[in-house]
Image 1 (cartoon, helix red, strand yellow):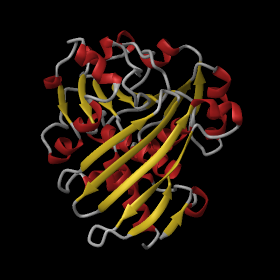
Image 2: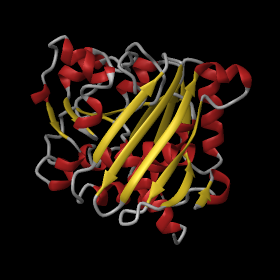
Image 3: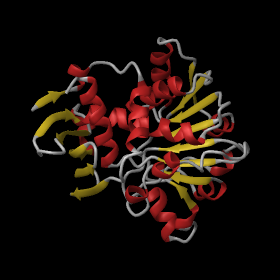
Image 4: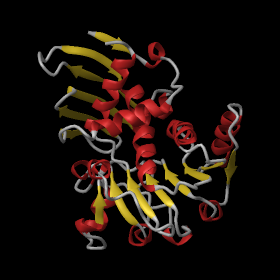
Length: 308
């Protein structure tokens, strides 16, 4: 069984490979997925399993330990085992951080490919962690017309530090302390935080903005307020892994603010066509749930690149 780590795989130079891998995966039969959460918030074991006909089987298990930031350890650690479709033989163990980093940014970039305006010029990212850097790298390749990027974080110095780091790669990246003002200037807004309470307000959005919601992954987490959802057309990467599991949609659905019919399409439906054309003034909202089937699509792409 092959072991692939972030170090052995090396830097990601072409994000389009992984965006296209997720897109192609949604042309295959619909995935079977199952998630298991054990433990309280902040001290959780999360296992996600998937089977995709034409790819095989995969299980990713990670621990999410909030206190690890004080221990100088990653808050999320784990691995993914990929099994051969025909024999069930374990093919590889892949570092979960590598899988998740690639999957998260590629998932959002694919959603934006279908939903964001072709003339988008400015991306605003809420959050200054590793996801933010990957998002900017992926979007800059998928949307060559994006000429400027803004990072906002609760701690301004973190946003400034990441902006300066990314400037060295030739991107026009700046840090903002005025969140409403930054969002009002955005063509695309990406939320990549660990917030449990909404921080993005729908009143700040301009007509035609594409909203990409990444951070919320538990039933008690939200990044966008009610007005974001009521003003926008709502899409998800997967109905099976978002509607009943993630607070971003589960909470407003339970409250009757939105109905399941308000979720217009997932990536399977977007891939099939008929949902990508929209009025230039429409606000679109994409919930990135990051299910196990997406992990498996990315793992398969990594193994193909590795010649496995």
